[in-house]
View 1 (cartoon, rainbow, N blue to C red):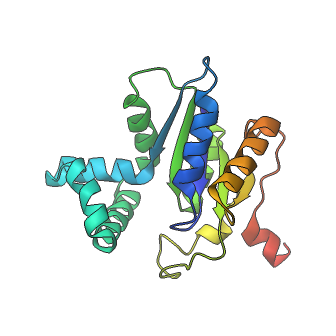
View 2 (view 1 turned 90 degrees about the vertical axis):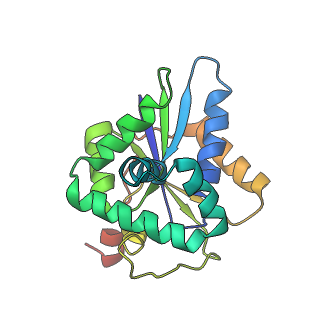
Length: 196
C-alpha cells in the first residue's frame, strides 16, 4: 500500500488536493485509492466513547464549525497524549473502512512532527504540503497549528489560483512523479530556515 499524507493549515485545500489525487488514481482501473482524514478517526473515537454518532458530528461541523473544531482538537490532543500508537490505529481503521484492498491511502490532516516521522519510518509515506498565503492562520500558537510550517515534506502544492489551476498542478505532478518519495529529497523547512 502506498501512503500519501497531506499537511497544511486549515482552509488551504488539503481535502481538495486529496480528492483530486483520488480522482487521478481512481481513473486507473488497476488501482484502488481511499481518502481518509485524521479528523474522521477522531470522530469515530468520539462516537465510540461519547455515544455521539459521526453523522451528528459531521452536521455539527456545518452548523457549529468553531465549536466542533475545538472539540476535535481537544480529542486529538488527548489521543496523542494517551495512545502512542494512535496514528497507526487511525491508518488501520481507515484501511478497514474500505472493505477492499487499498493501493493508495490518502491521509489528510497531518499536523505534528512525530506524525511525519511515524509515516515516513513505518510506512515510507510521501508527505505533501498545501500552501495558500491568502488564508489567515487561526491561533498560530495552538499546539495543532504551530508545527505545520516546520513539518518536513516531499512536495509542496501552492493553492493560489482557480480550481482548474490546482487540478492542472496536481495532474502535472502526478503524471511526472506519481507522488513517489523514492529518490525525492525530504525538505525540512525548520532546519533549512535556520541554515543548519
